[in-house]
Image (tube, rainbow over all chains, first blue to last red; front, side, top):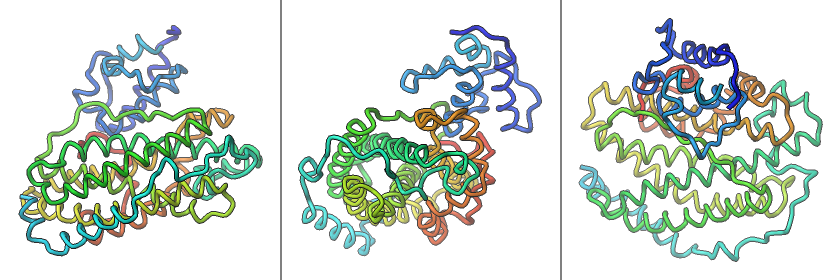
Length: 79
Length: 306
């Protein structure tokens, strides 16, 4: 995976914050799915956001939910 | 219990019998039904331009005629691919319910339904693989969902199936009649439209009954969550028409930015209302939805989830 600065994962965080105006921050290890920041109907948009921010083309048939569970995991896998 | 509602509803049973009969009478061999030329001409529309996602937006004037043709080609492959993925879900869910308690009466129709859907999936996949050399795999919704009551879960399954079929039918009926399109494209859309008119007629009746069952048992809070979920689902399924991979394949730069521009365009909101005109009328008439306001649901996450 290409290694980049964390500024890109900030784009993912900003997308989540824009969807949840009641929130002002998201910790890197917060469970995004458990806390419902991402739910089943927003998951597709969420993956597209990670894809755009990271520049990595994500194989839609090989998604491992664990790689999307926290901002930390996303950064590790895609940035 | 839904089986009681069904068994007391003569109208539903008459419609079911008529649809069962029609499925038998109209049965055809899909594997012999179509002419599949080796290739289709590239320099023409593969999808009615009015149904493409850039139509009427400020992105369209940035593309030349050849790019628009190419985009219509990949968007049509995306549309048939959506059918392949959508039918998979639908077959799985109906198979889960056939010959189980509550669904005794519609089970015979479910046999026709599953059989016909399998055949539709075949011809859509055949079109994609033959002329697009691929099937676009959709991202599957993942993550946690709320726990619904059994009534709400069954209602949501069949209303999702119905809305998916209605979305597809808007495209099928337009393309079947569009003389700018190749005969094979028109035939695939025409045949699907014919079969789906039966499925939609059935779906509307069943969903109305399931909603009555749900209304009788659900709390106001659960009904609110169901309605919120449905509106989000209408947005979710509409947005699946805007596939960044399609824009990439059509040679359009910055596919993600283009997708965002298109979804934010006033034309897309209009397009969505056109696509869902009939099902929205139905949802309002049956009291399933109380208004047509879809844009409000676009931003909210974590509400009315399934």
